[in-house]
Figure 1 (cartoon, rainbow over the protein chains, first blue to last red):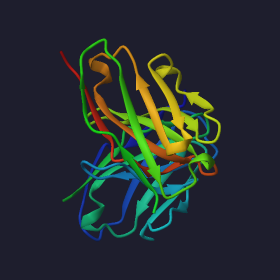
Figure 2: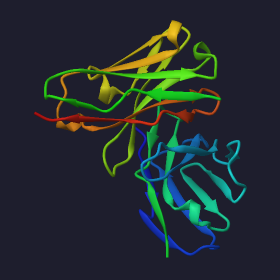
Figure 3: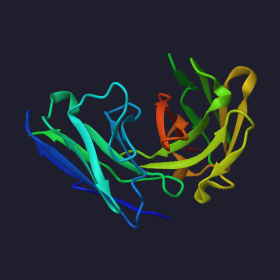
Length: 106
Length: 119
């Protein structure tokens, strides 16, 4: 099974900050990587698919990058409504999710 | 508008089974896979399996084989998941989610259903 490791597990940032979240796969996943946002008590929402494609309706402050085993989700200017837990998901071999990064306001 | 409406919360006894439903609307059910996912409180998400709305073909996470059985009713555009021989480790929120094969991602989700296994 492919293991996904996200870091940090908790991130505190201020409104307007540029925020970077990391996701590392245990083997090459060839950019087959999606990102989700989950707010408290809600279902996850797809933000980014295939590493860097923005899902319809998602603000352009969200972006993704990466290749091989290392991937990044960037929020260019943090907004209060971005407080959530962010999960990465690989689909190169079945599906596995990372443990998530909880993003809070400083 | 695409909607996935899941059945209500369940309280079940250890050793029992439960059947969860996910009624869909707003898209052609038979053209997509439906996935089921598990999320224990405060923990990460586990993919349980997929079922294709067109022919009922399934794929399961090895961990959930024998635990979960996925079925569909095309006439009502509803997906089901049976969970058997429940233990406390099965207490979790279960989501159904539409899978888009081209992107390997889940673009619409049900609201989730809490299953509590307790005597």
